[in-house]
Amino acid sequence: MTVFSDHSIELSHLPFHCREAGDPDAPPVVLLHGLMYDARDWDEIAGFLAEDYRVLALTQRGHGESAWPGKYSFELGCGDLEAFTDALSLERFTLIGHSMGARVGCVFAEKWPERIERMVWEDTAPIDVDFPEGSEEVPGAAPFDLSAATSLVHQIHHPDPAWWNDLPKITEEYSELLRKFLKVDPS
Image (tube, rainbow, N blue to C red; front, side, top):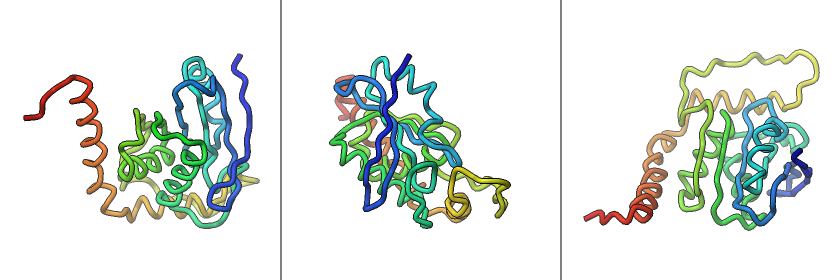
């Protein structure tokens, strides 16, 4: 059975929750959950990954036990991810993101492709213009800040053109790494 430890970490003067499992000296894997979830959403998958990796699941702003500052965007999430990985001295890591977490990961990988060892996007694309607008009301107590949902869905409908324009930065970095791995001369 995998043992998880819960931590609180301050990023950009805000408290964030994260869960950790696995050998601290193993290669790091960072997990980013989707909208309306938290780091615990990864527990089953993290249990398998922890056999070979140091698994770090971050609860993103506006969700669960992390800060609910009322201001949300994929760029802010990217900044949180940068602060998180910097605080843990993770120069390169594998990044796995689900939905909202994958979008945050995409923005991060466009800015710092050299920091990504591998990346998995689950249930997302860089821009998903058909994502439905959400309701302004959630019945009962929600484990997330509703303004996070409305802000992020609005941003999906009005995306930054750089999301598409900067995608080649990710593939350029991976192409270079693949050439080095395969010992292929690009000339």
